[in-house]
Amino acid sequence: MIQPDSVTIVITRTVREGCEQAFEFAVKQWIPRLLAFPGHLGAHMLRPLIDNREYGAVLKFRSQLEWQAFQQSAEYLQFLAEIRPYLDAEPQVETICGLESWFTPPGARVMRVPPQWKMALVTWIGVCFTVYVVTLLFTPVTGQWPWFLNFITVNAGIVAGLTWCVMPILNRLFSVWLLPRRAS
Image 1 (tube, rainbow, N blue to C red):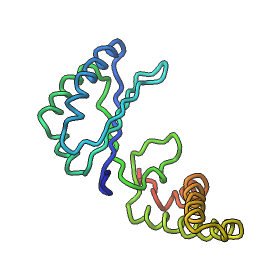
Image 2 (spheres, helix red, strand yellow):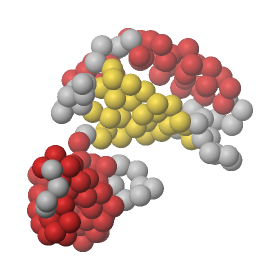
Image 3 (cartoon, rainbow, N blue to C red):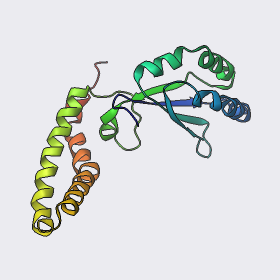
């Protein structure tokens, strides 16, 4: 079971032209050691699109502390040193915890994340609104259904409404407050 404080890490690496095969071989050799690391919950490797040399890795750890221990491990540091000659630049590492996925515009990278209290407040607004509207709309239809069928139908409507309607709108509406522009 994934704990509430689990952390997802997105690593993007741009591989030097002509080094793609060597990089992929090194990654394939590394994966079994990665999967055996304590606290590791999974990995997904992403190949670049055509005419692109940007590779991705999505890692999940049980906690921030276990991710930090992994980063400082001799095995990981050795792997980083091994692949460094194949890279054009330093990798981009993004850490995602909890609600960030609702606060990331489609196609955007999660480089800056709003404070958790702001995400919680906007999510609370979204949940209150969505529960009210879905209950108002669904109750005339599902009100006489068996309680469990009513329960799962209303909850499915709430989740769908939050994911595809309410949170994208609230994200745009509160974008300046959630992530104020940095002074240049």
